[in-house]
Every structure is written in C-alpha cells, then in structure tokens.
Image 1 (cartoon, rainbow, N blue to C red):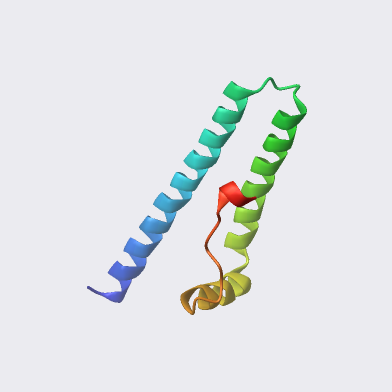
Image 2 (spheres, rainbow, N blue to C red):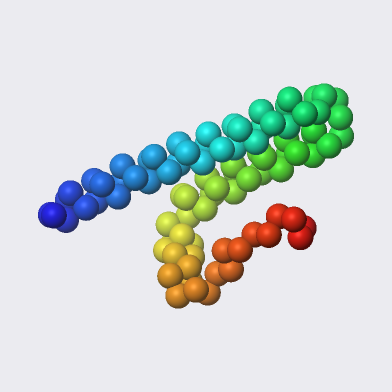
Amino acid sequence: MESTDIIHESTKKAFINFENIKDCIRGLYEILRITLPSEDICFKMGQDNIEHLYGNLLELMVNEIGTVEFMKKLKSAGVDLDLPLDNL
C-alpha cells in the first residue's frame, strides 16, 4: 500500500471515529433528556458536562503539538486509559 493510500485510509477512519464520538455524545444527551426534566439541576449539570466533553475533544483535536505528545505517551503506556465509572 502506498503512503498516500495509508494517509487516505487513516484520515477516513479518523472522520468515521469522530462521527461515532458525536453520535455517542448525542446518545448521552438523549438519555439525559429522556430521563430528567430540563429544569432539573441534574439535567443541567449533565448537559454542562456533555458540552464540556465535546469542547475538550475539539480542543484536543486541534492542538497538534499537544496531540502528538499525548499520542507518544499513549503508545508508551504513559497514560491511564482505564475509566472505572462505577468508582467515581
């Protein structure tokens, strides 16, 4: 496979991953919306957290230097990827 093919496939996969992440975030919001009335404080806190999650994801993606360094640490197991939600 040529270098341009690899770059094209990686870029295509990145766009697919980004769309999947947006779908997951929308899904979280839908669950929140179905579960709680919009005036509930827990709804507002959940909505705020979802918005900040998306904002932070976008910031991470446009921060090229930081993202490269993050990926280096990720590949060398310098970043803890475990997120035990039941222990929060």
